[in-house]
Image (cartoon, rainbow, N blue to C red; front, side):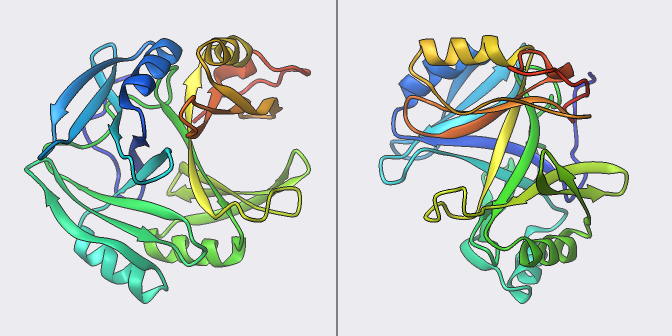
Length: 268
């Protein structure tokens, strides 16, 4: 797949991990996805670690002792200040007002009306992930929400997405479209979940084989949250938790490594 130099506004462009143990996270993810890493100073006492696949930036991580480990998601925008103002008018809360990140971009952090956090990214020198939709790279982004209708109204108005809803694996599932491009998915947190789980965005990385990737993750301290599951026209997915507690998903192109009858399909 060609190297990406720019992401369409209104699409997910980057992801990074906030973790309580940067060194432990580096060992886990480099082993799981074949990533290499490059540490970059990011202010007093802070390090921002770029995670690379074959020399291409695909994600990052940094250490934070004051918050539970989690993956963050970033949506590309043309003007972050204008997008923040519009998000406020649609009922979002602003947790981090727009600010410059040196000369690489401008960003803000908002909480949608259902409680899910997401970053907005106005690129300058750093456009975001330079590879997506391949094994070891960001493949899909998905919203789990306590109010699907409210979330759909918010995101379709903020980014001009179109929401397409169908039944998938006996679950009502929404795919957000930007033009002809699928940009994200959404489903409801229902009674089968623990109700104290907040609305949140989740990231999925591509893998060659779900079972093999799970075995590798477990052997280095990871845990399985959702077993390999086939989805028609999508692939095989699973949800894992790293040794520090951050959750993330994996998707096998072609459905390789599912525990039941495999279904074909790409991931992005």
